[in-house]
Image (tube, rainbow, N blue to C red; front, side, top):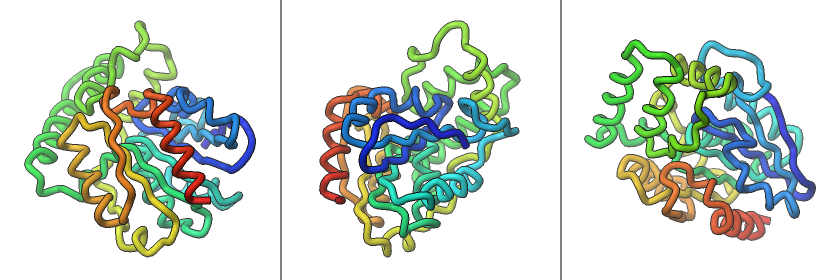
Length: 244
């Protein structure tokens, strides 16, 4: 797992999701490097991290837990990286100063929800199609409520590689999130949603209640909430300050 570091100060570990690597996912958080040491992780198969056949939340969680063991940190995860962060936080609770997740697709928590069942069926149908990574990626991003307009044309090799990793990876709804273990931990938790999807709202509602966690909603960017920058950064900074 590759690490890219910005700034100095209290340590913050950020775990990306989808197909954008850490620096691209959290580019709008760079101003926080004036006060914090941001450690942006590129999961296996992304950025300059080692090649893999497909992404795996369990493997990534072990990698993140190892990074946390180097020094305590605030942990932040977006999308698939949010699922990874939930798992990693449960594995290394003494190294987590606070936990923030942006719309983690932990759909196993709400598997009986008809909206979730339709989404899972749609994604499985999408994955079953004969298609190239270049064809798959904008379709998938649109399905999760992301902004496919952010994708460059033509798709550069790193994103083609990442799309292939996603296509062949373990599905996030297969993850078993240890809610009881997370609830027993004493560090503060924050769940952030984008107010655009009943699918993600259902997951975030469960996390808010069961962790338990503070809940914030930032509208205007769909699933790509970190790209909003300013208001999200103010929320994160305030949350980290209160955790300290």
